[in-house]
Length: 433
Image (cartoon, rainbow, N blue to C red; front, side, top):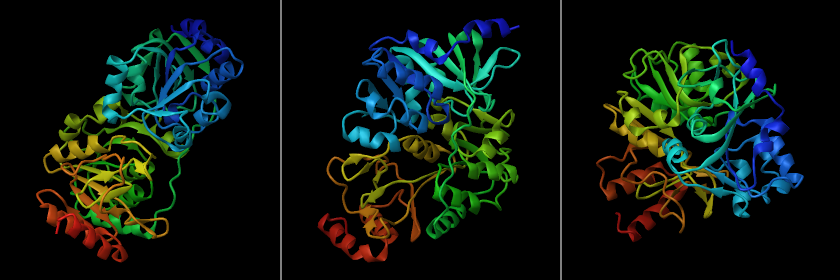
């Protein structure tokens, strides 16, 4: 029924982006949703002098963006804006060719809808089904909202993008142009966990009850925590990111979702980042559901799951209990992402807990991640009033209800022993102890 309409809208990447004009605002899919053929066609137009001064917005730039619109011969002719700072962004931000837009992740769909005039949206989608529906695949986040509040929507159909249930449908009638591009999805394989991560994982797992709903990030510590949960029962998943560690728990029957207050028996996420095996598991799996980040990361929605457990990491913590998850040496290194969304949502949950887990040191043990004060200009990602549990390989402490003296002493005990004496002296100077 919809085949004729599909063929009418099918075109080449070059023709699809030909309608982009100088100074237009373009939003593209993030992470696995980056559309490589369309990004390449835009970069070629810029290189050929046919396009300039466009504004391009995205979040968590990855390989496809790095090789196209972020290339040195392209990015100085356009304006790049990032809602998060990933590896390809860092050097460009320091040289003024990429600009960070501060946000809490759950706010971005509203920003797209109410505060931006978006000309073009481009993103990767799964193939159309017989009812005329594509899906946004493993990247829903802000792109599903932006796609419905733009002047022109161009989709790149990749047969390797999983078909995902939930609020992920996109009908062909909403699409202005279609291109096809068959390429393997980018894969994320976290580094092996350090021994310290296993210790942290066990400490946190002891405080997670059976039937809890969990949120995990990606990386060594979240994977170690997932491994420590293998003997739990009837956990639920409501997470910004669906990672391989969580999928492994689903396969083992640890995560069932049976006890969830919201969306029982469904495993919810707004982005999935992992390997091909994980994408294959998500594909056409009715238990896996994707929703816009305005839903998944809404503190109000998060809080409606009883025993909601949020686990995130940070770069450094000061003696007041503030968490900096964004700055290193005075420069923007990352972004807030959904950390504060989940810290607040989990604490509002009946029986909920939020954990900020991190290694006590960096740079082979030469730098303490626990500091007396942040350097001037450093952003606070999680304010001290919101911090709940702090965890390192040296311990786990609940900050809620503690005085500034108690907090400082507890936080010092989370530091590597070789840094504790200096932290005590600094705490005394700050009149904390």
